[in-house]
Image 1: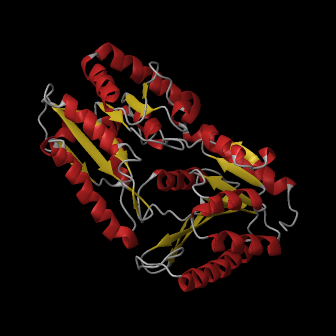
Image 2 (image 1 turned 90 degrees about the vertical axis):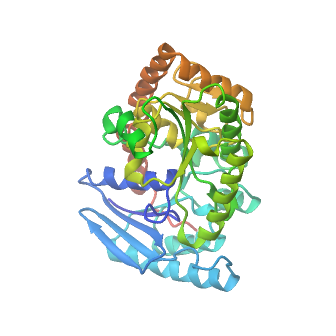
Length: 406
């Protein structure tokens, strides 16, 4: 089967859950002899094509945007038409059987509409893969009204949100994101090496958090719970001088670098405001460095106000790190409170500080969470378990539905 995957997020341009998912898709597809995977992603560099066995990646210069911080309608019109021509070329060149659009509802509507026109003309079924909630009426309509053969959601929370907003229940399915346990595991790193790399003392304990600080051009420090975590950390820091906070910040695409730098300045301001700047390390790690960062940490915390899934939680669990998340979105589909981690209310720094304190002072509880977390990953969230189901769905759609889209 020949699959075309289209994503506005590229692992070469930025770091986040979607980008790590793209890498996992590539690695999984390489092990499947009956799949040829073609991927279309943006790049800020000159366009190029990379072929690796049965995986071909089209890196297209500024595919969904331009280098400017200001996007005008003329740019969108031109870019979307170029996009449509390129998609048609790929379909015809590689005899594509099915297209999976990753979060395409989040870019300009013109791209979704032209993709449907091309797919309809060439009678190629379309699947929409949702990594985020619809955040506007237009995005809701792009999900509900266009002729997607299947809408694959990364959590039941996302699927439920779609259904609540009017999506056809018969098109909805849930396929979680998996974690590559060959990369993320307790042996991927050790505390001594991470402490040395971060210039910390051997007795220091690391509270790790990781995530984007930008969504498009918007600063999401509050939404991702960084501010709440900083407040919680400031309550613990005077009593536990060995505690250090490590904030692993997701890399920003080049065209958003100005906005990213502004958010970094604001993050630094919050650390100074709460008098913990000297006990906090803010760093952009490479994707390949993250397994060792998890494995060398003592507690993982993400205090998001909303989260569609939470890839970082299963990565931390696989790395034998106890986790704390919030009772929002898809996180409770991963964490069962007081079994394999803690769930806390969003925006409650006092409760969050109390839960962190319990995990850094109670070794028996830590080991309970670690063991249960590893079992959770093994039972449900391995790459193999999730991608077998997801790719089987793509095959089913390709086999059973070859009708025109319109």
